[in-house]
Length: 228
Image (cartoon, one colour):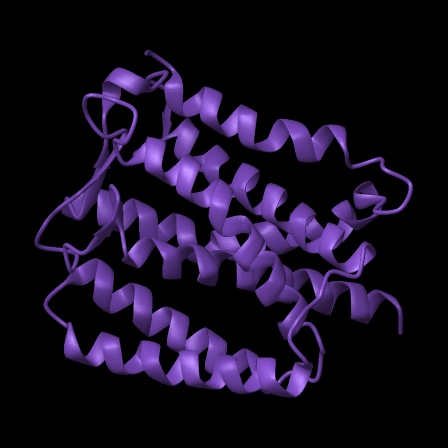
């Protein structure tokens, strides 16, 4: 089972990478915006990850790692923040290219506003759970701030996010112990609400939402700026 986390990352990115040159989607043309967008997201998530690892709010099982670390994080965790957003941005671009049904923008913006408000309320109510508090606080703040943007991408993003839930359940399920004797990524019970979907802490669904929304939001802003 050694190196399992690495193999998960490679499996996640392999299909989107191979299909990046599909003529209708032409995902490779978005890379010049995507990778800076991922870097912008990582500027928040990597320090957060490092700090939480040091504090013991979560950690990584060495039995499933290569043993290579950078700034106290396994190399697999760094790759996670590249491979997962890459794959989900691909789903977003496919949803746009093939005109998947999506929520009308006005209603999608209202959903974002309500989600931002709800996230802030959850953070206030759970100050003592570090992951819950910071996860929902940052989600609420970023969603609220980004809702002032005039870009009409929220409905498309919600469609892509809902599609990504299925692979998310598989990947995050494996990472949190659904297919192994011990979890690859573990969480302190004191840092979370301890409500789980199968083996996945409920906070992870919103953590993923924040991560992916940041990437798509930055990507589309970079694209809009370059087209001026």
